[in-house]
Length: 404
Image (cartoon, rainbow, N blue to C red; front, side, top):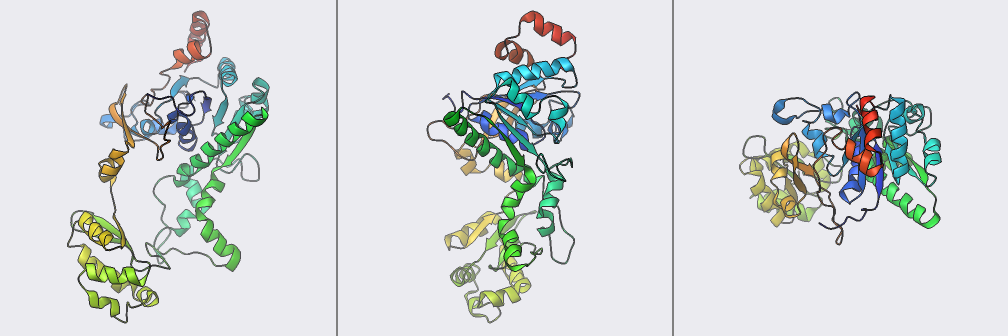
């Protein structure tokens, strides 16, 4: 196994839920030594999230947690115990980077604010990932990505124009912020290498999410026009949507952006004359008659498996693709070719797929090393091997309830 690009990097990970741990997963997958600080008294919400192995709940049985936490160590530490804070400070002194994702003020109450952290290690890099940033009128509002999806405006734009807004699947902003967080840490590392100085990074998940709505925000800023829900349609394409195919809950996504593609689609579905039909001859006419257009296209797709419909359209130069379910994605031959899913042996769950990385560095690619940890699985190793505790000191702390 090759050394990762970040194999000398040491990370003290005080984050929880999804956005923070995904930031540190980027680092861990590329070789960084990442120590997650956790506690059974206040476990990470993902450890309490289904699906569970064999349907039986347990702190170490969540597939959701395991999927996103490969290549990390787990240190059980009850931060409500003053002695545990001393251990946390030793971990910070060991680390190059500290990551936390609590509600602003939490680390301050623990005595682990950036000022205190900097006193422990002057050139430390600290990333603070929160809902709306560390300061400001709404900084103290606790929330998860599920609420931030609405706050950013994604929910307002999701659904059909004549119906109420629909919640997009999952905590969407939790999957956006980590890209910015990991990049910011790398930039701070370069800065420290050049200057010898660390810094504090304030990452707002709210603001990170807005980056994915730039065209809509620009439209309002320039033209004062509010975007509305349009279902699966698009203002500059028709047909544009998902169409039912042969089989149970099978669909094909199709998008036609110009007249050449429209003519090609008409040939594929066996109605070449449709391209010259006044109702559909131009983009504007196709948009005016979109419901009827969609009905005609679906009369063709419903007779074919989604894979067959997509393949025929792609061969003709029409943008199309299978709407895949989880099984389709897990069995996707392209993902298998790149080894996107890492099958690792988890101590309690057994053989389980873990999420890999979507990009490959030629000389130092991300690699699977260890399955996601059980809670506190590496407490003794971290304390003795990384922090240099003696056997006697470790046992005293163990008895005092620090490692809970």
